[in-house]
Length: 263
Ligand SMILES: [Zn+2]
Picture 1 (cartoon, rainbow, N blue to C red):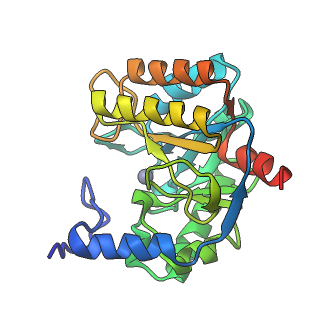
Picture 2 (cartoon, rainbow, N blue to C red):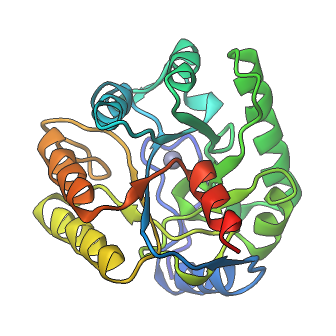
């Protein structure tokens, strides 16, 4: 059994794997679901970046904007100014600039904690600390979207955070359609090299064939990316495919509004 001790300060923390991890994920996904009916004629695609490295801003936000699109950037206040395996992460002054450019600043918890190890109240208070951090950084609009660090959630934390945020994102691969979970939206990674690029392009093709809400999430964008990052060329190929698909590109909160407006 994989019973590694929980240490959020570990350089590269990995959530529980093995049978314990699978059982935990199963319940987090199946229970405490807040149904979101998604009925679309035209697909919606969201690009999100977690943590987030400066390269996501310099190479990701800029590329989205060049196409008239905007992205969602999920911030953990405790990671401000930090350098880690993703490279240099954001500085607080980057946030206002991104928001002024029309990008969404979302909440990723202050301390980038694994919610599956915590009570819902502890997750909520860490999220509140992050909202205070964002306010301090000059963002006066409270964040509407949340992304669980490592995609790890519990049924209780999903319900608790939806008292504050309009939608919560995880990392379970897939396209949100039919009846989705507003408390743990599925998302496809922008990582994994050649195989990951194939998977991302297949998702664009699939959402074009059968419209739904496809959310991408990425981290660093670099010539030699981390395990959770991609190259600028990888992103360019995906952006081109999205452009060709005729999908609307929206931030997470705008996508949710568009979906709710159709109900
Ligand atoms: Zn993260």
